[in-house]
Length: 247
Image 1 (tube, helix red, strand yellow):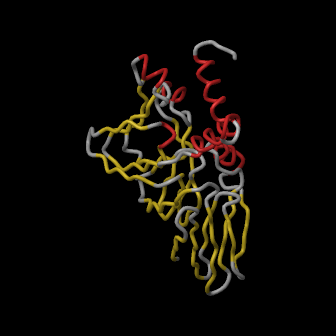
Image 2 (image 1 turned 135 degrees about the horizontal axis):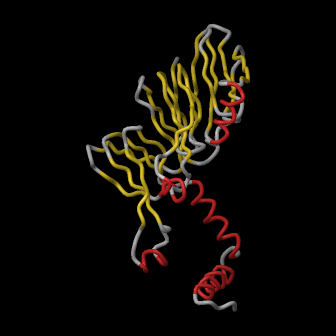
Image 3 (image 1 turned 60 degrees about the vertical axis):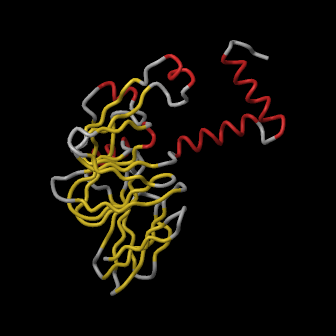
């Protein structure tokens, strides 16, 4: 089985398969498939397994694509602008991912729930305390917004990250949240009340443009109006609301 990533910003992955090879994907991720590729939608793990996947942002049913001819191709594309990333999973070395990042997997890769250990992370950690846990042996592809930035953290090495910018990290990485602190930082910093902390050892992948940030910016521009006085009055209105004015 071979994997070919195409595109720059709106990337897709072409999976070249031989007879009897198969991949499992997120529902709706398939872009096209050639003759001889058979799609079979399965409920892996029973009803409970499907419910667990839904809690992580994955689909209740898992589409499986199997090659029934000597050579076939199936292509998968991410639902948002950004890039895709290959992760080669090793036994007993799982990765934790934010919700909705899984694209497809080949081999004995399983998608399960992962709960963070601290209530504070669950309340203020952006995506909550439920993460996707990718474990087993095989190849999996995830997607993220904008570009990826990779870190290989040493023991006790720590980075502070906007919660929405985290894509995935090895389970050996300690994930926690930290209060930004300071009145001006809290009110005017624009980064929210909390930042995530990732402490090594282990690998971590960040995204430069979380979809929630892009959607919020688009929504803000839509509310203000497009250009001209709409943008100016919208900004003045925001300032007025900060100081308790309604005009």
